Amino acid sequence: MQDLTTTSVTTAVLEQMQTTQDPRLREIMASLVRHLHDFARDVKLTPEEWLTAIGFLTRTGQACTPARQEFILLSDVLGLSALVNLLHDATAPELGTTSSLLGPFYRQDAPEVPLGGSIAARAKGPELLLYGQVTDTAGKPVPGALVQLWQTDATGWYDLQIEGGAETDMRGNVRCDAEGRYHVRTLRPLGYSIPLDGPVGELVRRQNRHGCRPAHIHFLIGAPGYRELVTALYLGDDPHIDSDTVFGVSAALVVNPQDHDPQSPMPGIPAVRYDFRLALATDTSSSRVGADPRQVLAA
Image (cartoon, rainbow, N blue to C red; front, top):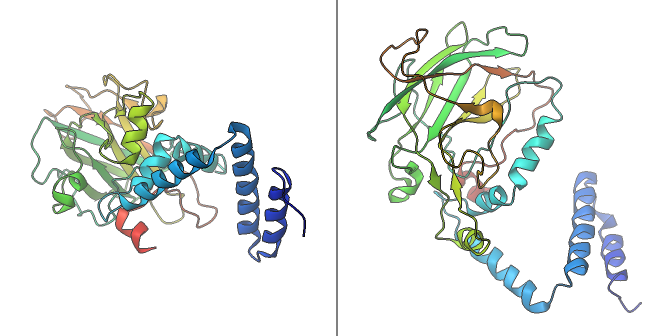
């Protein structure tokens, strides 16, 4: 037995974890311990500060419900979700459409919507048409690709934030035609503040951040043999387009609705055309940094 020091304690922990049979788990945990210990030494973490952090993480877990995922929100505001997305994109064998964040409001059981239908079941507001084509990276159509969409209503709320998500609205799944084309009606989304009534919101306020996301529409697009695409389109006239509090905006994903689009399949509705490119799949790993909140609780 040796008395531990501020440096030897790290070695002792790493040595004890060497019996971990799963090589990837052993690699991840060893790196996590090294970085956590280096962090604590770097900031000279005090017992009081560490207990405060434990309390924060405890409250974050307690805030999670089947309709709310506070830990995904924490990952988002720390930029960790964006980083994991970028790392995952770098593994793609070919360049598809730029990815973005799944966010904490995804729901896996959205209703099917026919081509030309609307994902607005009850919400009211200015209508918007989304249309385009899903292709592979060479421009070949991907017939029957499934396009999942979800967004806020015209007042800036997701259905999961209204009455605990009792009703499904402003989300839907549309199937592309034989040429990979889609068109679906929705409402113009509104930028919004992330939930500030929980521990993550408290942290954001203490950092004097505005906590706002620019108006956007989420997409999750997939087809057999292709890499699942998680992305979003952002409205370019939103005041927070350059300061997204969860770091999801990329220049390639910024759009501006056209009031009179001569190519629109449904004239008379302000329209956004966006063509999505899917990369070929090389494995079965997921592109989703997040999940339906009910799935996370059930895991």
